[in-house]
Image (tube, rainbow, N blue to C red):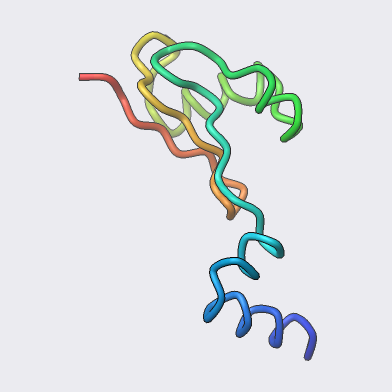
Length: 82
């Protein structure tokens, strides 16, 4: 527990250390197209992405998604195209 607290403190004050410990966001969809290489390296299947897209972005149409990112927290965030 002490190490977790120490790493959290260090990540708060050092962006580089935060990236090392927590990682950085990965783009999963760009302009309606899946970024399969990023999905592979982050262990996100097409079915996982589609499920989160329906639940979080309220759509099942990939072309309506401008950007989808796997955030450092593990959540997927969606920005819809206008």
